[in-house]
Length: 387
Image (cartoon, rainbow, N blue to C red; front, side):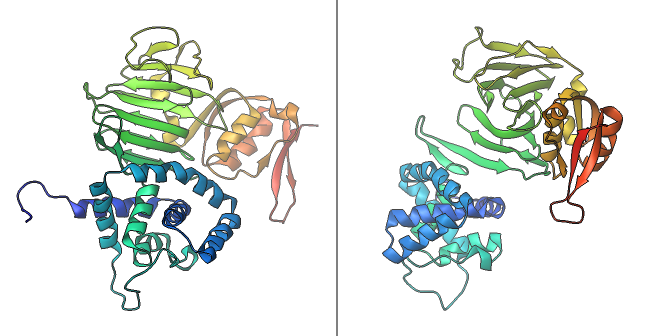
């Protein structure tokens, strides 16, 4: 006999958060999660052949499937009651009236094609075409470790999400603890709110953090080979594979104080090699192994200038400057001559005005612009040495 006393699961809240998640998530990742789940349940030879056709269709399919396997393993470790709760949430969201649906669908019933439906509708309605357990497991796999997962190390419930921004897109996140994270273009982060600590992994791009003070729950940012730990402050972290400081991690503090250490250093260490503290107007650069540069000092008001659509170059190689603009959109600029690519550039520019940047180059450097492929889809502007 069940009782109505005590706290009840908030299925509506789950549904709202899952709907919000699915409406913004990469549908290819969800397709990959569906295939991982269906293969676990067992596929017929025909469905297995369909799976291999899907893998071969695009390189992104195979990459998504391979990256989904760790998340699917996390699904298998979820407590049974948690998986059933998410199963009910997804089934409730997508149970739209349709007399043509089979009463007993099987794992070999194909999900609706992404090409024939909108992204959000396709993902939200997928449970109508698959057994609820299969659809729920897929949802947990794609959100598996990105939405709600069980932290087996300390038995605590964890809020996790993976957030991305597209080329040229800026986005502001309001985290459950009250912290705010502003994401630059082409950025990927993974947020985890644990029982005794808060953590953001900056996988690519750059972000500005306004951390809500909580002395009992340190806030860690992991990027490249370093960990940045704070209680409450404003600072930026950059870790990109292209553009300025490519391959390095750059930390800059606007206010407050942060602790920077190698990612493998003891979390509670107060001092030691590879560990420094930064205050307002201070910054440091770390290489891929976490080795730290000397502390740099600058105007604190310049931290996170990308949020205003601005970028500053200081003795920056031209190739890096062009690559930085490419993170926000196609510049159509090409630099093939290594000597031209190595020319040094300074100044502050509008990130949304690549054409203006290009027009300024001949006035700043000994270069000229040559348009190639005029009138064709491959039209570009090559930066070459001035005559």
